[in-house]
Image 1 (cartoon, rainbow, N blue to C red):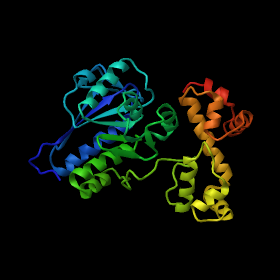
Image 2 (image 1 turned 180 degrees about the horizontal axis):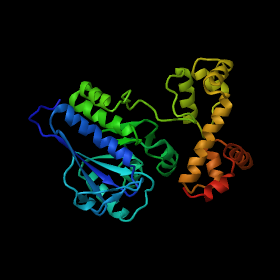
Image 3 (image 1 turned 90 degrees about the vertical axis):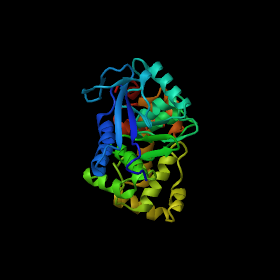
Image 4 (image 1 turned 90 degrees about the horizontal axis):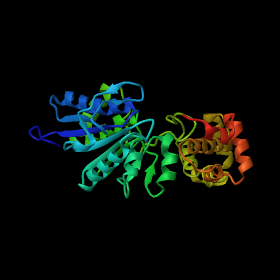
Length: 320
């Protein structure tokens, strides 16, 4: 635990056009609140953009920055904040700066889709990371050799990544906990009415439901297993055995908690993954079908239309 006389920690936040304001505010306000609880400014931060000019958030609000990425001052962690797009003016300069930062052995972090930019810069090779659930399918197709988990945040040596939104709070609380212990982390969480501090072991949303908190642990285990096996779907018997249940017991579990059969739920998971891949990648539609466990293009197209009211080809033509 740092002594009062020790210098504090400084964070830099690189803001990419259309970044998530909520993710940024959640991260900064967590350490601001920690300073308040400590009675001193142990944590400090600065904002950076590709060119040193103000960066526009996804909600249309501009945020003034203090430096360009090319003249970034020393920082304990450089967090990359990305929201709606990973393509922007000056991208090559940003990637070069991230590579240079990493070559020096400095720590790098990412909020929400920022992991995508770190991966493009080669700064997640050999590291475990996470990204927002909506972008994970596309990330894993683009960077198959990177271990991108479904956790709310990941800290692997000098790489700090989170899924954005409220998980920015959890990531920064883990940093506070490591610096000052669980007491201060809990005090800060209480300030934000943050009901439960999540750990790296907590998973993000894995299905059509927002979450499965409060539901059967065996149900959650089966759903997580389904989410991890979308390209080669497991049989009803395999899923049941994984939870130590019979097929009939699993069926009753899903009907009671989710009001649908396991088979229908599994199909929804696969089709949601297919939609993510269609929106985020340029994979051929047949490859998307195969990646989500469909061996027939026609069956995939029919199932997709029934679920979303449009064929896969129309989804691909839509701009979001």
